[in-house]
Image (cartoon, rainbow, N blue to C red; front, side, top):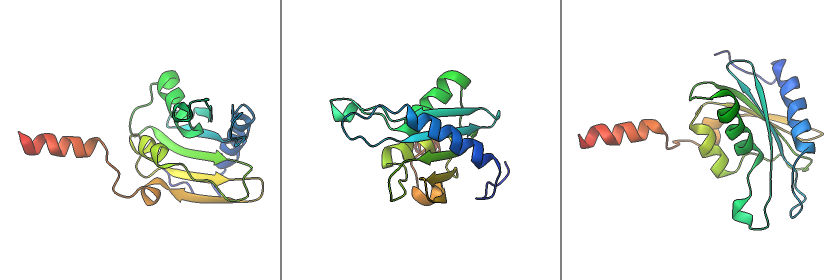
Length: 147
């Protein structure tokens, strides 16, 4: 897989898709809209937005919404996730929450993530945002040790 840098041209279409998803966010309680767009190995772009619920724990983040859509629509498997763009209108750049980081690590522990707002963008790697993530390799290791 090619390394995605801040200059990688595909980021523009991914960020545009994330802003389109942002417009669809359902956030009547926090009024904090988030848009996300995943780029898959098959070159598909899958969008997601946050979907709030009156019972706050039932709220879905944009990143996990996009991830679930990628599994449902494209049969996403580990290793097929290439990049993620996340956008908000917050002044401070907003990285994925811990639950989203863990969910994303299931599919790509070194995923490039571009986080942006209307004024700036910053590129991160998932393995730097979530070092030592618990993934399937941990389960395989524990299973083989107990055999």
